[in-house]
Image 1 (spheres, protein in one colour):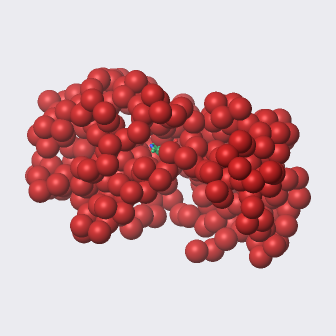
Image 2 (cartoon, rainbow, N blue to C red):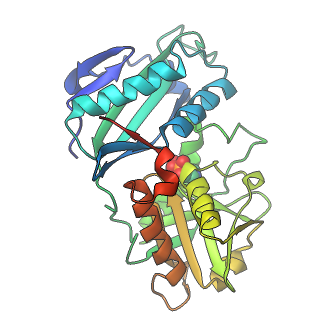
Length: 305
Ligand SMILES: Cc1ncc(COP(=O)(O)O)c(C=O)c1O
């Protein structure tokens, strides 16, 4: 992995090797951290960060839901992200801002007015994927149920959500699959361990509603808007396990995954076992949008120059 040379920590750019935290950092013990995953794309007009405003808004909302007091404004964090990417020397990267409870009295009560923030980035090229994005991922319906908002605020992209997701991911990988799909407590399809999910059936594109307990994915929103702008629409409704097995196409969306085709769920082949037409068209459209080749969505890009 090629990392940016410097990491922004509480207002300073520090060399990669010095960007360390204390072992008594509260977040390390109690998962009191919220974070974002953002992409910067190499476009014909230079590097551009995708939907920076929406990611910043979600980061601050995530912190608010955990009563974490941010010492920086949205503008300061946006500028810090831009500065970190500029300094990195990377044209195309994944950006990881994280806000976390720092060192305080050790114990469960979080030091909510001692929030550290750091921003790192590393090289990640458009379309780059190991997990079957274009060839078709094999997914397993997880035996782990997606935790939901009755237990903790799932609108928050919090580290605390990810032990559940990581259990599902590891279970799937150990059994030879590429990714997990999680059901919610009502037995409906929720999401992947790090992606939202869509199915295509009878020319309808369907995704679980936000009330199903899924993360309000920014790529999910981008795809819904691209489909709408192109004259189509997405139905947000509960999806049963059997709808997934019977679907003509299944795809997942996420900042890392972009638009990932799914061609097998458990032992069931989806459609003809190859990435479907709608999925491939959306992969193309999303790529155009992310590199600024679709005028209608230029406002989603923050150019670094
Ligand atoms: C659980 C979960 N669902 C969905 C997503 C997709 O969200 P986004 O498109 O904002 O990256 C992610 C990505 O981080 C995730 O972790």
